[in-house]
Length: 459
Ligand code: F0G
Image (cartoon, rainbow, N blue to C red; front, top):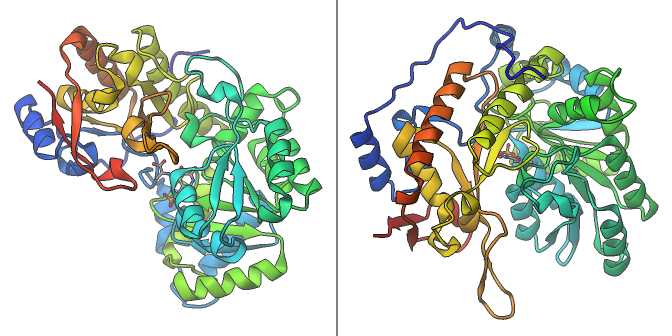
């Protein structure tokens, strides 16, 4: 396998970025309360906070925006998008939404009632939020390997099928209005799910008459993994793998800000007509008319082209190789990274990286701050601060097993030399590793606290 694949594009428009000097960076992060979410984008050199809505669009997407039809109802743009969505996803109905969580909001509003439970391999935090927000409970049933940082398995995002069956038997299917699976599993290191596992998951849900929805944000990356790793799929096109994936489901939620290659957009798709009628009513109330759903016509056109481009194998080969290059280069330096490297991000366990900083002193925050101070690089902690929760009985804080820092790679944005630069920065951090101090929270809300918490560096 080559160590890296040259970018399959050349650059026509450039966006300047600036590496501020070290003293400025130290001042900036301190006045942001050591929280990378509070740093202004203009103070960041390489921004790996998210791969969502941060893609660079192609010349064909920008050209398509010029032919956007802004008619309120029945716009040409909608029908161009519909043709592409029908071909790839193949559901009977869909509505555009402004992003993924809007689709989740409508899905939960039409299907979920208080006291219901919704299983998945692992829900993303907005999906969890939407389920909790309507009085339900999200349940994660990913296989046990997902929690072992360095375990090399091809489909580490797979649902634990036995656990799923047992869960449905114990809960009673009448309390499960729908079941999900997330491809790829973002909350668990961007790990893929195999076709066999998707098929078996569908079979289990359907044997209890539970509708099956796929969280499809990174469906093309998942399809490429299936082509590369699953026996019997090596000769299949990405399109046909995607089509097969969705043929097992009753619907999908989509944040097109990921594999749609656009800066805003999403959809909710389904086969059930009665559900569609309810969804359409909700959509009209909250998002917009069903042929634009909170987006401009030009956004729909950019997305129609993005969905075609994301299926290209040379793009996917480069995309996965780029992330793998960063992750494996870190691993060679002894950095504890989630293995195998996922498609959209490199996840580092800061607890194993800064072994001298106890988890209560937030090693993940220490690493996120170090990346910014040493290199102007912005990642985010998805570990102790993001996922600690109080024990419902004792009230004592339960901390996650891993203290992850995520470096998410925007699509088609950074080049090989940016990646080499990040590896150099990591070497400097490693050289000073023992000098880093822990942090304590000085201010934080109760929910979603990692976004706005403020910290203080310990002496
Ligand atoms: N599902 C998954 C698996 C996601 O990763 C995200 C967003 C969503 C749903 C929600 O979509 O942002 O369009 O409303 N993930 C981003 C991230 C925010 O940084 O991982 P959205």
